Image 1 (cartoon, one colour):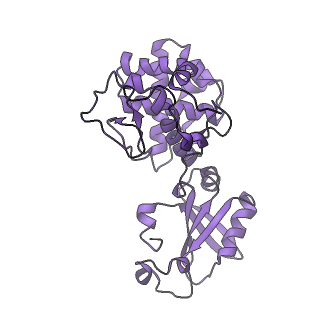
Image 2: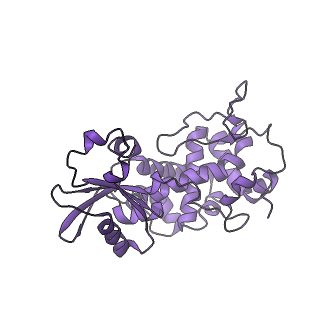
Image 3: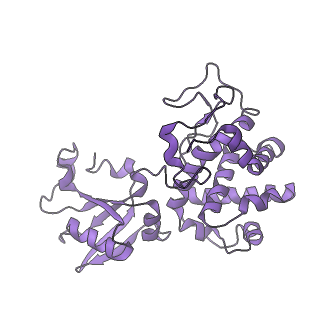
Length: 309
């Protein structure tokens, strides 16, 4: 199946383009915030809150502006390392969706949301809003180029510390035929218009950092058994302990106890499993064969220096 042309994408997402135009042109919101608002709504719709974008399109402008404020609350909640307090911060969204939705509920799916918003930023928003963004963001001269991408608009606020970068193709330099090459077809696993919200998950996105108590040896097999028994037979991709990284330059500093690994990397099948394990908490405690195991999200900058580099 041929990938969609830019005109096809514009036609299919006509309502979303009108809403985005209001955010940046009529309401004078910043391009970066407006992109994150739209990506958050795309993710919420994909997550199960159906027709949210169609509902927003039909609303008066003042209500759309309030909806956008609540979307900002959603992605700022996701950015935070601390869970939100209270359940009434997004009442308008809950009212119009006629469905229970709250910031604590969204936060329980924090890492799924981060990966999903990243994907929608780069698979939909970067393509269908480029001509609108070009009206408010002046072109750089010479064009800013990203390897393997078309020359891109520079969006102030990106790279974002939580949601990463976005490559918005300059509309005057797009060839007008296809916005995707064959290497991008993995973004369409369900057909032309349905998007894979896990397509941009990296291994680090779905990795956890596991720690053990000194004096209680825990094997790789025990770690795998624990998590597969609770979260499903295929949820564990790999368990990597200190002895798996003997070549690490940090091995001497971190390997005082030659007989026991005190920590491990647990690579999972998806970020959905990460959220199922953490349930909105920073740290979860488990027990197997009388031994404690603590699990938290892997942080490459901090944890990668221990022994996994």
